[in-house]
Length: 298
Image (cartoon, rainbow, N blue to C red; front, side):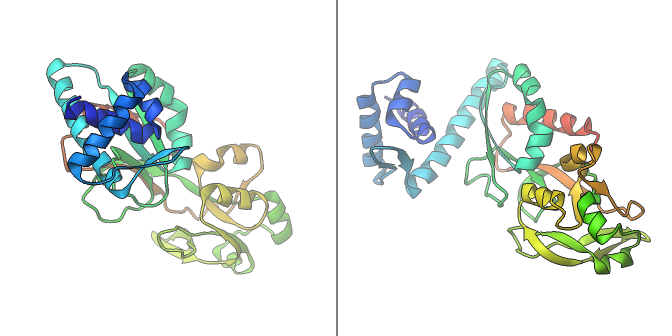
């Protein structure tokens, strides 16, 4: 087996976490797969895989080699596709924030896959900032203001948000009609893992942002827990309209302080500038831009 085929086999073993499954996928005997990896480790002088009776997983060196293999195999595949004028194909790795993906990407994903049937998607959900190049991610969908980085940013739009509360909360504490009323109210706190600090409630007043922090009895760091805590009547909250559209229509949540608009939040796609974009990444980015432009929540 040549090195190119060996790389493909190694990548499949890492992804399937199994010699048997990877051997089946690539059409080689399991004994051949075992021998190829043994020779590869001997040539490189490092252990690439941890093997147990239940699962196979990469070592730190194996994970690093896996990322390099992905890059090399992707470059070869893209070069072949460019000269063959072939439709985009292959594995596309996307990093998303789950709530955004479930509202904007997943519902319309069937039409993307129908248009590009030879693209295979691997979607991972993590809210932490990841190194796309190091972790082999082709592009990332991100919500919120972005830190400075070497990544290319493709803005998808800005999401509408509102201040809201559950009817039960408003029956107990009253409905605020002015920002000064918030002194006697509670809010559900939400804090990003990057800082650990509870975010204030932000309002536009005379063209400037005014930040207020009512008392907080409960604070969370996930959007689903934030929504549920608000539904349970634990305080006021500021949430994206797409996340609570159904709750508002069914009366489970009520908008408050409508005369005091709040800042919108950007949604962006990020991808490395380190190498030429593959055709599958390009078509996904173009499709995502169109999908977000058509949304009523932007």
